[in-house]
Length: 378
Image (tube, rainbow, N blue to C red):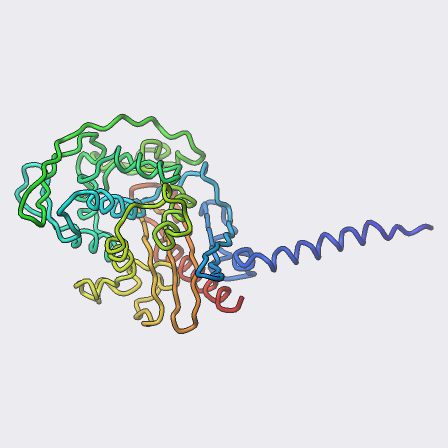
């Protein structure tokens, strides 16, 4: 009998090639661990996981290059972005502010007939330190839908659209209230009320989720999928590319950058990494990992001083997302990660019953730690 050695050799070659490819992809190595919280989440497609991990290479003359690794990233697969939209709201508010003479991050503004004044620097600090919704909504009123959406698109940051404010009555109103800006030279500028263009429903995969949702008005469960088609859309890839433009603007063309003075950009960076206790919040309630899901989302221990995390998180409707640039000055390493997952076992939305503490935070924290180790040992 003639033995065919070619087929077994071919299969063995494919196996070796597959193993070689796996070794070359640190993200795949992490998500294909044999056990633990990462594997528990990855094995369940209902978690709708998407991850981008970026290695940062510094060449001669300070040239920066990126090596991206992706897992299940698809702009057509919808996930609710929650508070991650506050990141571009803060940056675009500062971009608009920087174009106004005699205005600074310490300038104040008021909204509509409300006599109360808000300071830009304080609202941005609250937005990043504890992800305050009111601060985000105040800044949003300063820029409005059209300035924000069009500005992001012009920089090549799409898909992207903001269709509503966060956790406030009449959140999807297209009317932007008038703004009074109090300049540093004691003069004021008035920005009149505007009405934004209407939005069409999203036609993406998974834009309708679950088997039911809680109706806020009647406090009853509606046995129908929860429709996200008129909600905000900020895919993982667009979010990750926003972070790249803020951390390393010099790697992008002029028209792809945010137009911020270096002082304004430095303030954004400071606010992104600033911990709640350093921003004046009670450290018991707002512990270091409160808005640092990757690496530290499952602990209330202090983050070591040599680790700085420049990030923005989001959590709502069972979806957890973190977009972070992580730096370890002690071990001289840096990397970027953006990850999202859905934790909603009962498939009922808006009921507040989500597995954040038991699944979501442990997954993101362990994912961050594993990628930290991969970066450290590369």
